[in-house]
Image (cartoon, rainbow, N blue to C red):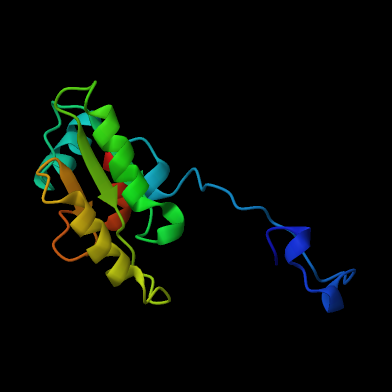
Length: 139
C-alpha cells in the first residue's frame, strides 16, 4: 500500500499486489465529528485558552518541516490587526519515531519568548480528555 505511484519501488512496479490509497480524513473519527460548542469551549478553557478571544491554531507535530517558528511569526503579524489574538500550537503526539521533536519544541518555546498568548502543547500528560477530543475542540 502506497499513497502515490511515485513511492512504489521500481522492483515492485506493475505487481498486482500494489495498491494506491491517497491520504484521507476519516469523517467518523472522534477528532472529525461534530462537537457541541459549549463542550469545545470547556476543553480549550481547561487548557488555558480564553474562548471569548480570537484564536488561531496549528495542529501538527513539532517538526521543522511544519515551520512552527514561521507560524509564530505569522501570529505576531496578525495580532497587530486582531486585538486579543491567541495562538495554540498542538503538537500532541505519541509518535516514538520522532526523536528530534523535543529539540524542535524547545526551539519553538524559545521563539515564543514567554508570550502569554502563545500556548504550546507538547505533552499528552494532564490533558482534560483524549488527544482526539482536544484536537476536535480546537478545530
